[in-house]
Image (cartoon, rainbow, N blue to C red; front, side):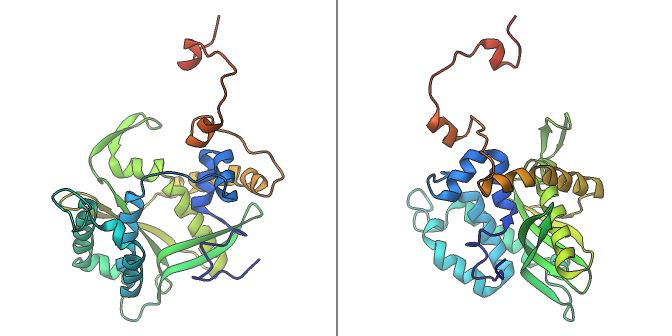
Length: 279
């Protein structure tokens, strides 16, 4: 295996990352096509850019300047009342930054005390079910045994319905469960222990994309961390086999890639569409 560095981390394909794994969870055929370069996934980058805008600010001044240099034109409004200035999403991003920057509790947690050994964007790696996996952690306090993942989300407490739990829950619950953040933190905890030989406690700092941002320190309970990591373990070997060309990728049949390959070769009944069966 190659030695992972800040310079080669994102280009490396010898390890499986959490984001790449999640792409295969959505559709193996699409993900393999993206990996091979034969398909470009079209999606709205705004949410990702806002997250990186906030993340880079708290990583270091140099990281933030680099982000602005690489993405500055994407932040500027080309029309409307903000023409020539920051797009409204990044105006909110500035408010999120300001909310956290002036919070002593956040600064102690994310940056640590003066004598703490804190690493930002720390690379971790190891094996899960024999598959080489890597990760990058926002902030790791090596002195105090915890790591922090900074998550930007639409809201923390606005109520939403969760189909799996069959109840209305705070939006942060849907954000964590629907995006698989419980699996991500369970994975990072395992890789961090494999990398350092020590156990660490995962925490989330959630900050909302509201005009007046909300914020909280969230802990994911042990049963959710274990459930997320266990689900990852049940699927990761098959995903790796697909990546290595040992197994044919499955098509989800619903994503842009699958729709682009679709041929009219079957008749679908109404009962099929609603999940019923033909008599």
